[in-house]
Length: 259
Ligand code: BGC
Image (cartoon, rainbow, N blue to C red; front, side, top):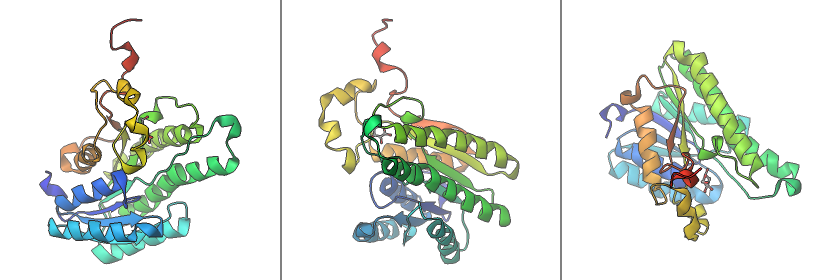
């Protein structure tokens, strides 16, 4: 646990399920003030449960419907959050999507949808957070959700890898640009994590062969990275991708030492 996170205002996009939900609950446990952004509207009931759980752990939370591809939605999100909680310390740009399509069959629509959610959505979140932090002299902290696929190529997911490669250099650039203002910008690079949308894919035992540690990660193991990066314990850390992947990025096919 990181006591300095208590009372901090944290916005988490895509927090209605999966990794975002785990991070919302972790920050709730840290007694932070959590803005649980969700999309689509159907997640409202789950978000109400996250809010109730957060309150029972000593944190505070509100839910805000946020389509990160909509510039106006993101601008309004920062206004709503700061009006409600009075400040803004941490923004986690987590909302993301993917779909499998061989490149020759990929519609421009598929490409645009993934890029506008994963990359442009994170850009808007960064830009609006930075504006607020600079204006109010806050030495805040931004975390972008990347992936092992900011470095591992992934056939049939060219839009997804392009978005995550973009997140990597966007994070590094913003870290450099705003370091003099004391604002830290980092990414998290999850590997194969056990979230509801991945359940079917990970029932294939071959997936574990890609993971030197031999198991599919838990959402809480990603939430722990977010809490660390946002905390004072990471006060000198900026511009990195913190991979939490059981070793997936370390060329598992070389594990036996051949080559
Ligand atoms: C993707 C998952 C994938 C994992 C490992 C993540 O970025 O969202 O679908 O299983 O990388 O390949």
